[in-house]
Image 1 (cartoon, rainbow, N blue to C red):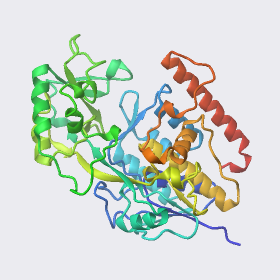
Image 2 (tube, one colour; image 1 turned 90 degrees about the horizontal axis):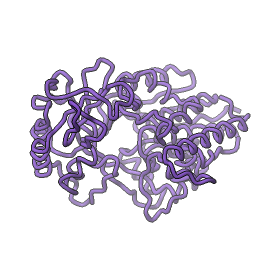
Image 3 (cartoon, rainbow, N blue to C red; image 1 turned 45 degrees about the horizontal axis):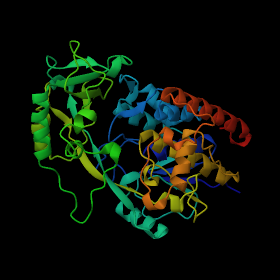
Image 4 (cartoon, rainbow, N blue to C red; image 1 turned 45 degrees about the vertical axis):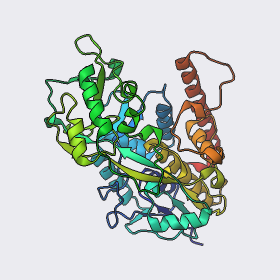
Length: 438
């Protein structure tokens, strides 16, 4: 009898990672991605695993939750982590990539895999056979309607904002300086310092600038990690100096500026820089006017303007198991931001877990529930067991992990202990899975 194949809907980070994990276990995969025939409001290329919001995959430090998650995924032969490391660009302690080369390389690897078939068509129905829905926060309207019918619940939603990108050669280097915060890693950021007068001029222009209107019948729900800079500014006149424009850890001529905008390198050729923390829904003309008030950006040319788009996710605690399998359909899995994980690496991690478990399901093996003490397991536990009444998208963070048996007051030492426990738990867990050797 011919072994069943696995259908994966969505060629983002989660879908690509799921395809890789399933195919690595000998499963035939049919990966559906509707681009380039149909584009979402946020995507612009035909490639798989396109990075929309930023080119940063966050910190590599093992004292951070994101750093731990990357190491866990690397132990599981993650395609996303492998290609990210091969296409990285300087960004201090962060893992930032040349997003074009990153997406092209993943597309090439999956296209050339003997067990993966890529179909560029929109899927409008939920398959009645082994499948992973990894369509992300911008699921097409037709499939969204089918998922609504499946869940019997309306979606939750929030608006996501992305930062502008400027050309390096349009930056006035006589007014900026190169450094990483606290001198960590190599000097990788272009820093635009502001004195108090310059900051207040920028601030007042920002909070009064024209914005792209949201749909009148929808309440704006912004996820905190992607809050538009103008929304942060409206909280308090100094809110930006404690947030995206904080100057701590940065000095010029021995003095700390009043505020600092950081620009992070986007590409290998070192021509593009993104404006860190400047997610925005200002209109394009207003972005040119307002952001050019920042010292060093008076003549800035924009390779991409900031924008907002609606993100959609299901009420996962009601519908998903910690394996990312849908409770009402044994052959159906979800993965990526549609499940309520938030962030590039978190999305890829969910795809990794769903891909492994979908492959195991087809092979007739038991489902793998990763230990809650690991970051992958903690994320899976969160999306499947959080209180549905106030369920919100979640990044990897140490608060998701069970507390240590012995209380450690020093935060850095506590995080180190959590990391050591997580990696030991994961290694022990993987050693026990003799039937899951890829």
